[in-house]
Amino acid sequence: MNTVWKRKDLVGIKDLTADEIRLILDTAKSLQEISLRPVKKVPTLRGRTVANLFFEPSTRTRISFELAEKRLSADTISFTGSTSSTVKGETLKDTVRNIESLKVDMIVMRHSASGAPHRLAEALPVSVINAGDGINEHPTQALLDMFTVQEKKGKLAGIKVAFIGDILHSRVARSNIWGLTKLGAKVVVCGPKTLLPPKVESLGVEATTDLEKAIRDADVINLLRIQTERQSECYFPSIREYATSYQINQDVLKHAKPDVLIMHPGPVNRGIELSSDVMDGPYSVILDQVTNGLAVRMAVLYLLSGARKKSENK
Ligand code: CP
Image (cartoon, rainbow, N blue to C red):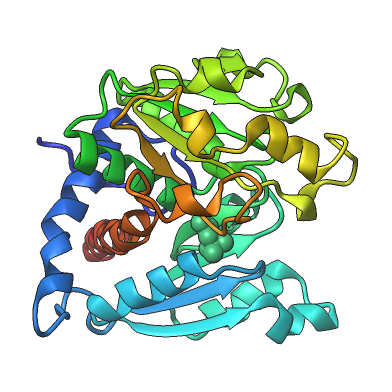
């Protein structure tokens, strides 16, 4: 592949070409072995500083980025929204301008406002990586999901991926839909009608409220958490009723392919969208997703730092 990475930022999958997505996945594949070495470190980002700004809670994404930065020898600073001066009324832009004054090279940002990383990317010369913005996109999660499917199934083109649950509020589903459809996978989204975005079919996916239909010939079932923190209204009568209709458990899996993969971006509500035995069972690749996230985030940091170096040398 002759694709060269030229973008300063990674704010979403929507804007990427299929070749750019493939470049990230191929780069992640080549970086995967670093984490298997006795000394798990390369000097690629030595002398570079990355700021991790998490204005919303995160476990997986934050520690995965922090570890990826350490593997590449970057200097890092990290803060979470609740411990920053934003709680004293400072604007996001002023907070980030102060951090920029410390001459950081890259910013990894999670924010509850959709579009926040895009605004920073436009306003600042440093590279910005979106670690999840509101209900808009979560690009590195989609990339690690695609990487995992490719690793387990050997390809993405022609693979059918079913997303089950809260599609309406899911930045993970949105980024995956952009990426999977660009790479030739088939996507079906399934959940209560109230949790399916209006006109979601216009994104090139099939939509259904029928769980059995959605999973029948799926190669991958990717489950989404019910996001109570983003729901101001009741979208279904009760959590128990949701679980009765949409939980993936051993009984439901009788309707799925025998080699189906069970994925979940985390955090999982055990016993709601997914039964404990399926979560810990042989179909589940949930922890492989976490492992692969490290290589994918190393690839993104590596590619963006290269693009930035080229623009500095001009
Ligand atoms: N998948 C994901 O974004 O998890 P965290 O919220 O723990 O980062």
